[in-house]
Image 1: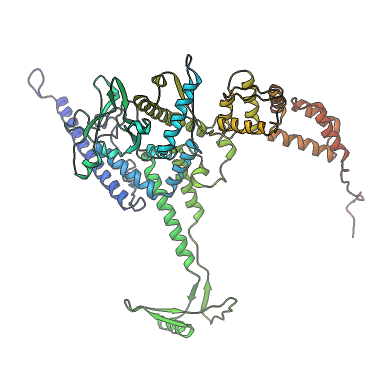
Image 2: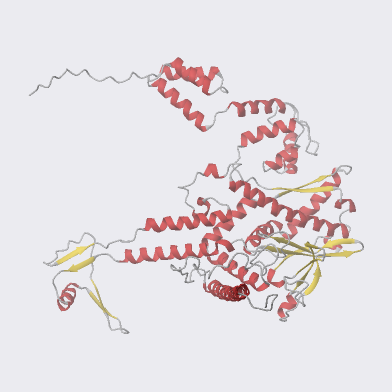
Length: 611
């Protein structure tokens, strides 16, 4: 490398040195990463609590077994689009193995995952099929009945729970739909595909991560390379190319579905959710284990007997004179003396012998605070409050964590949407199989809409929600079927039960007749008046803080600390929604029970004299 005049300049020498340093740093960083991945793989096999985590106090950028941190941009060319850690299938396999071991061995992570399934799915997702404009209700009912039968046959309720777990544990979910025969009314068999069985293409270039995409669109997957069970048993290394959808007789039949998590659209594979906080779970487990072991050792020491002035021989003689049992270890030759101490025993110690209780020098509260900090970090990753991670509700207000605007509720609603779109695609894929085998009409693919209804994440005011739904139904915003579904009722079952009650001559509890047409849109009689009354109750009801303030006003009146009229005027200003008659009755009742304020007995003036 020379300049225009043929001489090597100092700048060129410096540039060459910088380039050499960069190559050396790149190699060093690669070696550190490989060593770290190997150690984490061994840690995963041996248990998440056995890794020896270190801290380099001399170099703050080298800690917690991370190796030296890479410079910004050093990994930019080694990962795939959207995820710098996804450098190869081997890196993904290692991350997935660590995640799976944590999901097996770490009790805190297991509890978090159960909570996530509870919040996302609850008791199950309700699916509604409605006709589009120009199509009748019969088509929607036919599709809904077919999907319900298929879901029962394939155990979709349990599979949906596993989908949520696999999404977090592996970072991705592969589902395969197997074509069946007309005897099963076209209902496809549904099976999970293990992510490790999706391997790179034989050339390693077309699909290095096992997912072949459109040449002009990296976000559109067209095929995957799969190791079938027979190929796995035979020890094959190259997978078979299988399209995501087969085209038969001009109709596309979906046979694979792929759900990815924690990556962007252009990334071909997902990444485990636990990865950013995996070491936090390991540290928390080790800290809890060490705290328990330390406490156990301290509790095992009943007392300390101190011989202030005595030789070893004199101490052993003293022990022998007071022992009730002597056991000798045949391997080590050591003697262990035992003395029976009954309840209420009085010990007369000779001169020079004192008894002390063990000194508990370790403050467990400090360690618990550190453990709680780790739990908060873990909860932040999974968007859960501390009580849901540590089972300790002392530092959390349960009501405030599940209100509509809390970060937790917003996150789990978004997660419900992510999972719901995948589950909806699964049902559309199944409908395609039903149409292909003639179990469903062709119009089913374009004449209906499939929508999920997830359980509510936030804490609901059932009375307020019912009042709102009643008003919306009267205004034509929601149907009776949607109303029932949103509060957890099965609309068809309720129609049948109401018909049975009508046949038995039982009243429905509503004023006016109820005409059941089976379509979920019957006349609800005088429900608008009932809804208006419920709306009035919702508008005038006081919340907890307002009720407390009103009680304090009444108590002040009863105690004689405030005039009745003054308290009444304050209440009318503070609670304009409350009826004046109710406020008047409250204050009058409090005034009727007024207790005279205690008065102190008069004390004679003192002028400094006295006996």
